[in-house]
Length: 220
Image 1: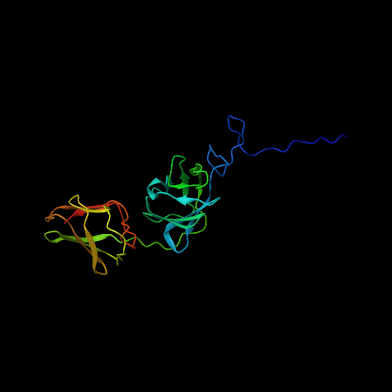
Image 2: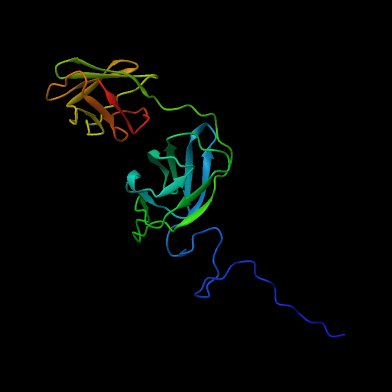
């Protein structure tokens, strides 16, 4: 009896243009562009994940990272290695959480080609570590005239970076910020801030080493 050789069956879906779709990447996957190899839990902190790329990339803007992960926001992004980025999320990341990366994001790029990361999706690898929420404001006061204080439920560390406009009092950015004690930051503003005025944390301050819970707001 003659032997009939059968063509191996392909398990990869075929796109309308005839190109097999790689199930590890998004529909518009382009091998010439940088891609995400995995997003893995930080086993020491349940609120952080590591993003691994297939080639050296650079972090351009944490605000431009189009990551959908458990409905959480990205509080901070740090480049650990040219192929490894640490993302601090606004809450605990569940085990095996599904993630999706939009092709429109500009936060991480290949410095050689200036291409952004391919659209992709998957599930978080490894296991999440214990979760400790970032410091949150428990007391906000207008101490005297142009001075305001925010007291947090955990220690908050001031570094030597310049003041930015990420924490606002009555809509104005402070001129200076110092540690009044381990849990309290004192802010000096240009104009008087009366009791009952608003305070806002709209992004992670560059002048604080401690990652804060944001966005957050309240009244003095």
